[in-house]
Image 1 (cartoon, rainbow, N blue to C red):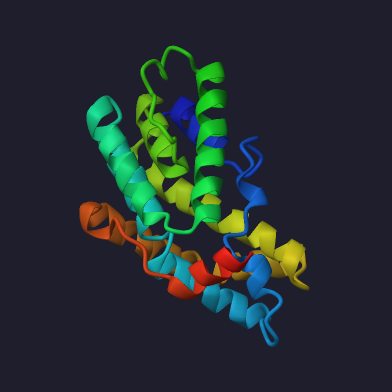
Image 2 (cartoon, one colour):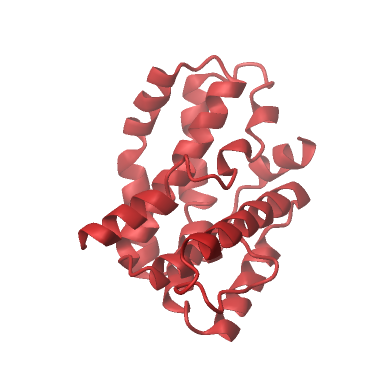
Length: 209
């Protein structure tokens, strides 16, 4: 990876990139009110997300959007598939809101590279994957960076919802690093087969939230 690509990768998938991804907990706020939902339970919840939730659907969408970044029709079809898997209105709206903000900001920062990047509604992983390809970021590293960003965003939400210190949050991040890497490897081996999610309990909590 060139230095320019690395800087761009760190920029667009950084938690400080102002698109609002840190503001959405994905149902964690409701889970945090369940008696006994502590730090250990949080780690298991995040493992489930990595194994069967955004660690499948979102990461696969990033990889496939990278592949289809210059094909508007194929990108729109992928976006529709992601939309169909967002069965909970709040989760769908969050993905669309972050994706729209990301699209607007990227077109402002990199107008030449983002010409023709238009899907509606613009889901976050689709925009992220397509933008990464257009900016010359390697596919593997783009998926890994997105995964890391998704996990840190949920841990940031956890520090607001639970009695979890920033230091404990970092310990949880370290504990989940290997599962996260394995999820990325699995998706990269066959992105099409991993374009799904199966976390009904989390979706119920997100609906209640």
